Image 1: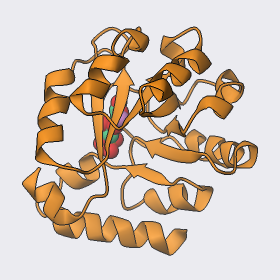
Image 2: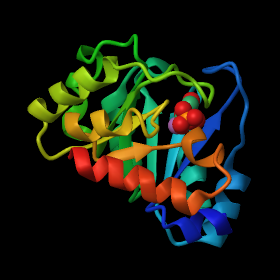
Image 3: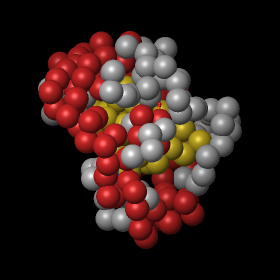
Length: 197
Ligand SMILES: O=C(CO)[C@@H](O)[C@H](O)COP(=O)(O)O
Ligand SMILES: [Co+2]
């Protein structure tokens, strides 16, 4: 965390995985609360879990500023987005690469953020899937003011295409954590993103 903060990242994206919605387990509310104690940066909590509606209050109490649910995990996206907003948090909806954008179009008016996954949710270090870029362009056309986030395989080679397509929030895992020097990694990523936007 100290090294990340020194590198000047603008927010922390926290991947919560339950071993059911995705075949991997990460962490839950106590770790989100621990991050909250360490920083005032926005905490962007990516909920890769089933029944997210049962846990949003606890994640918000732990310090989540934004909570993003997966459309594949729930029946009624719009109503859960409304619940998240009623807690005073930002509400995001995510879709995996194989999920058509049509799945969430009706819910977009309730969303503060749309997350287009450029890998299948579940693991860091996967290869970037450009299908997310076309979805970003379409979301931007449908909802010009919505925050658009892209997540998965974003690195120095792919980040320019993300900003060019219209992504506002660029989630980067291995292209920072896999580098010895976070300051240089973040500076180079920011330059590549800005050059293309
Ligand atoms: O939500 C996820 C994966 O499920 C992502 O946030 C990744 O963990 C980002 O890691 P890289 O793809 O950048 O290594
Ligand atoms: Co994520």
